[in-house]
Image 1 (spheres, rainbow, N blue to C red):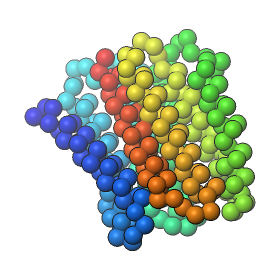
Image 2: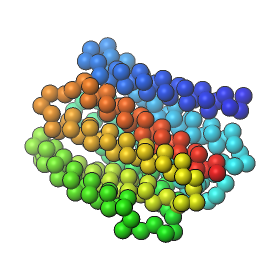
Image 3: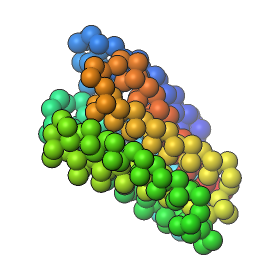
Image 4: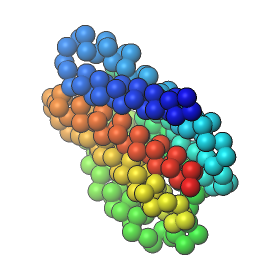
Length: 240
């Protein structure tokens, strides 16, 4: 039974992610209504899986102070990601800004968690932070200007969000090398997919004249996989 609960939560999350990814690419009103069920269940299921993993490995999971902080940061990020998921189901600018704010807070949770497990040898001159800065420099102006064409009040929030998103990715490259390499690779793959997902969402919302159903599914596929990999990598790191 000890293994059943995390496995069941994992299978439930995978099923929800697959169904919601499919529904995201369907234009029918029925598909949109169904997403009011599938999308809000994603993060609570992933959070349950994260916590169940901790309860089922009481002697090893979160044994060190920095992995406990890492787990707390991830759990906080999952809670605020849920808020963002729910907000973005709505239509209109208020819902969009609520989603941006919630996901920005989620990224701050990830940043806090990743930096709590930062390696003592890590510096801002490492390749990861440089890549994060380059990503922001390349993407933020484009997205901010494009958003500003729709509504000038969106320029600053989008630029700030892009900066926090890039910082989240950069901080995931600074994890202590004493953590298992496979776990660090999973986390980095997850933050990379999260970065890609939000970039695709920006393209969909600000750069395309007509929304693409395929792109909408790609946003959810990269997002749900990225969230899963971050959580799974952190669980693996804490079990070391």
